[in-house]
Length: 325
Image 1 (cartoon, rainbow, N blue to C red):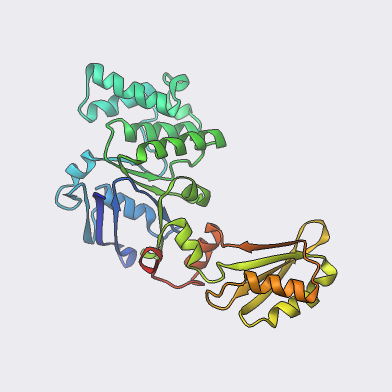
Image 2: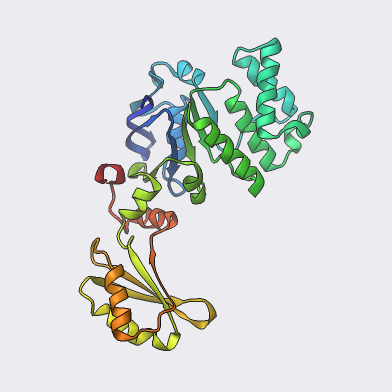
């Protein structure tokens, strides 16, 4: 695949505070990279540096071969950037603002109107075209910001929280648009909505304290974490204690955790030692001891679990799923 974005030991300090600490990664054409991290992790600072709006303290990034330090104007010509908060000129109408952006990008006349019209249609902005931006809802302002980022059909999109403030239907529309554009672009999406990563991203990078902590597909991130192959057993509450004792005695079981299930039942979550498979061993124990289980199923970690474990330090730092696969 063609590499469109290359980040090489990118760092940024503000006084004594190091916001970004030597991040390196690459994004290729056809990839939608989910850029994740807790508040203050360095996501927005990194995206601003990639977009050429903030000068790195050390390291560099290249977008379509253009260096963000040596050629920031060239970088801006090949990216579409949706900043945090969708900054715009609030006294302009939506249509006036988009025409203004098109003209800045070098379009006029029929082509300007065509590009604005296409962006308006794709983001569903026709009904607010003549309204001032400052009276729009947060969701509409976000869509106007996304519209300006795609006006010039750039090969690289950098989107900071693109569905922030959107209702479920609008989120679906924007996610569909990202998926539609993905084949011909490299797209970086910063988001706090982890379901969005699974819905539209082909890969996820988790950062914390300005460093890359994990890099891989959502499936790789889930399966490479401890307890990713846990088995859940649902059974009557009265049988939970004795069943847990039987499961704890099994050779490959690390721990058994009890939690409530529906209708007064109990759920036992049984975690393995290392990567040991448990399904057959648990099923045999259920049969051998006559445990009255109504359900036995594999419980893989969700992406929320992955995020929490990695960013709190409960899972290994500098974990790279792709490299480990």
